[in-house]
Image 1 (tube, rainbow, N blue to C red):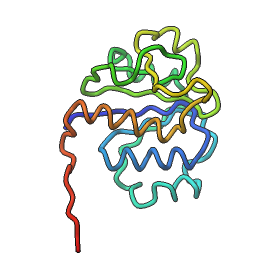
Image 2: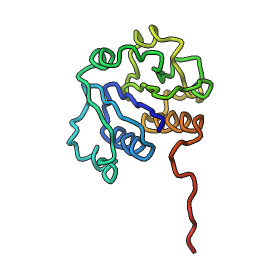
Image 3: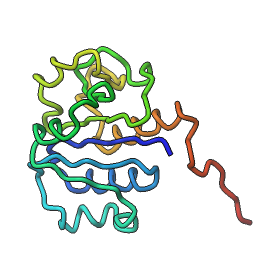
Image 4: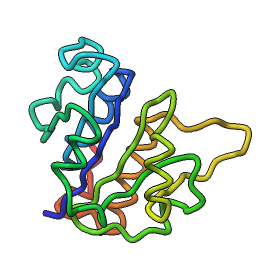
Length: 164
C-alpha cells in the first residue's frame, strides 16, 4: 500500500493529536511525533480523542526535529511543509508515495527558518485573509485526504450500506 507520513512538530494540544491519530489510523497513515510536546502520551484527553483506534496506529516519537531530520536524511524530496505563510496551494502538488506532510505547533506553526530552507516544498490551504489559521487536526485531515484522492484512495473502502 502507498504510504503517507504525518509529522507533527511540537504539538501542544492533546485533543488535536488524538484526532490526528484517529485520522492516521483510519487511513493507514504513519504518525511521527516530534518533541517537545505540550502533553504526555498517556494524557487522558489524547487517548480519549483517538481511543478506539490507538491500537491501529503506526507511531514513532523523536526527541527533536534535528533527530527526525537526521533519521530521515535522504528523503527530503518527499517533504511538504504546511504553512499559512506559503504561496503554493496544497492541492497543486503531486504527492509521491512515502511523502511526509509536516505540520507545526498550534500556536506558532513551523519554524520560519525551516520554511525558508524549503520554500519550494511549502504549501498552504486557502482561507479568508482575516482568519489566522485552520485547526491543526482539520488541516491534517484535509492534507491526508488530498493525497489519498490523488492516489485514488488505495486500499480504502469507498462505499457504504444504508440500512432501513
